[in-house]
Image (cartoon, one colour):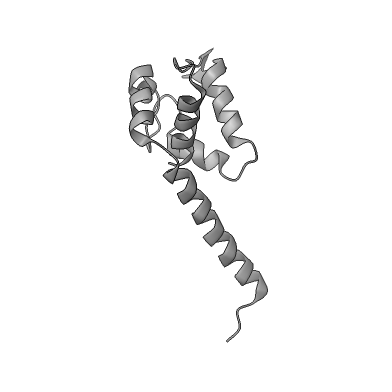
Length: 114
């Protein structure tokens, strides 16, 4: 039985996306990312899979999945302190304390791999 080409493309896309996600996840130092999260107090407003004052990492990863420039967008968010709404109030998002680009990119990849 021959698989319709549309279905074949869908299966190939899912397999490819799974490989990309695995590659991103494999390229993450989870211990270092979690240490940065703890040091900077990110856990006060964010969790891996639960909404707190801010979105969960899973929600952020889902929102940015497949979006061109997702890493750059999240990097900018974590390093510039943009305005965010919490309980209807606008306040500045805390910047990560590290200035080490590799450490911040590792944190970005950690969040996007959730």
